[in-house]
Amino acid sequence: MQPNKSASCVIGVDLGGTNVRAAVVDLQGTIIGESRTDSKAMDGVQSTIGQILIAIQAAIAQTGVNIEDIAGVGMGVPGTHKSSEGIVLWSPNFKDWNNIQLLAPIKEHLGLPVFMGNDANTAAFGEYTFGAGRGSKCMVMLTLGTGIGSGLIIDGKIYTGVSEAAPEIGHHIIVANGPICGCGRYGCLEALAKRDAIIDRAARKVSAGRKTLLTKKVGNDLLCLTPAIIAEAAYEGDLVSIETFEETGYYIGIGVSNAINILNPDKVVIGGGIAQAGDLLFGPIKRTVAINALPAALEACEILPAKLGDDAGVLGGAAIVMQSLLRPKT
Ligand SMILES: [Zn+2]
Image (cartoon, rainbow, N blue to C red; front, side, top):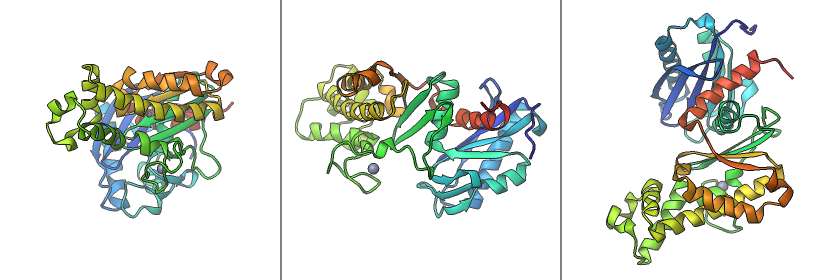
């Protein structure tokens, strides 16, 4: 398929376990139309492919652009891939996705070039191209949420290692023999700083009988705690909540220090829902990094909040198409 050099836009797709979001994006990175549908993650790959096509077509219909104006489609997909072959080897959120061909049917249906990458890498590429990572030579991104995603962009390219398994900063071990992680190992950054780890940290303090505003906010039902509620209490001066973010920020800061010492990046971009806590979290992260990163690497590195929010995935998908088809190779 020849690249369509006269195209005026591209399509970015962000596939998640709950929703699939598609956006038509102009070449400056502005979303000009978008649509979201249920990803039908438990209904098999054909259902999900159908949903992806529905989302893409609805996004195109919103804009009034013709298919000839679209250069291609770039998708962020959870899991491990052989992305050049369009194959998803395994995906945590989708039932029976073992070694499945994802791209060929979409390509065939739309008659457009289609690319894919791991969702965390794709979001990182979105931040690199259009957000907080612009102009970076080596950018690390962490996405803090129900898990901890990570991406690495070196010299303008997504770095995925030799078998598309890198980076997994969320699964590097911070505390040997620490709490069990979803990956089955112990003491990973994710086990210490994901959403549920933050809630558990606060809940343990409440259960220990500490005086806290959190009991006013959720009563005795600690299952109702969320990072947003803990952040709200912290901003109201609640010590238990402030400590919860201090401790979480410390672990993330150790993880970021390790990444800085190994990779010598110029930007570490931190996004995801948990990062909405702002200085409550960035404060302890930066203080920990100031102590634990090596001086030469520390001096070269900025730690920044992500800018694109939920748009990072679709914009990253769009950026992959632009880099693959529209930008001159350097
Ligand atoms: Zn792990």
